[in-house]
Length: 341
Image: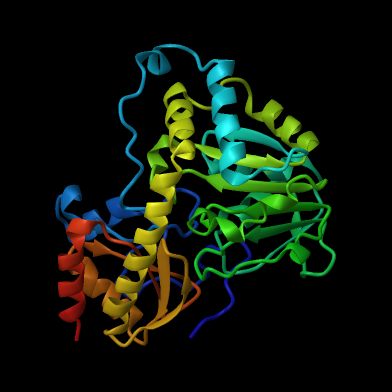
């Protein structure tokens, strides 16, 4: 049974797992995926023996290839930055009136954007990625009902249920559209709104391209706001290797097309395997799937004992989320699911 989560997405009193496994992954106390170290502390096993399905990261990342030695040895230059920006503008069809800023991961932008205006009131649909509300609160903003906020945050598609938003919802003086998971379906992007005043669209390189460790993200939108954001972040925000790899990946349309096809097939395969355990698909994207299961905690613990990490949530006793396994992990996962009783 689902209950309303706290506004910052953290676990409230009495929330958590009956197994005693912590729902948090960092000192903030907020719930996140990717807490593999905690799983290993509790259930043992070498890190390389675990299958981490708690995140929505593409398990077959873009092949980075050799990075020029100068990218490691020299400060990032303007030419490399311009090449990345040009590749991003083409890949995402960024309108001419919008600015584009590469940043060292979308998380940096999430933390800084609330400080570009306000403070005032903000609205965000819950449950969703909880760092947005936390960042706005930290900057002095106050949550409010959906009608007439000073700022609106749209996670598009939403994490964890995959809900999409429409252009009409970008109606606040400051509107943040987090498209970290939208590259699986570029036709759904709202990037065409990016030339409007007050619009900022966030892109992540860690999800679809599977390069979370590269720490590369983008902010697209209102030139005035992006100018202020660039000043806050400072010079040389993106590393030379990230500039080179990002430009190469964004130009590789064939890799992107074949990856989308594979993700679609693998998501369907995952649905067949998980729903066979009496789960019901309730949402997601082709990078992660959200299910409702009457024994979500038991299923989670069953998989943990087999060194497979999934994602539970403090706002629901029946929601469980799976990322996609890598090609060599399917047999272990399907066998473990078949053994669940």
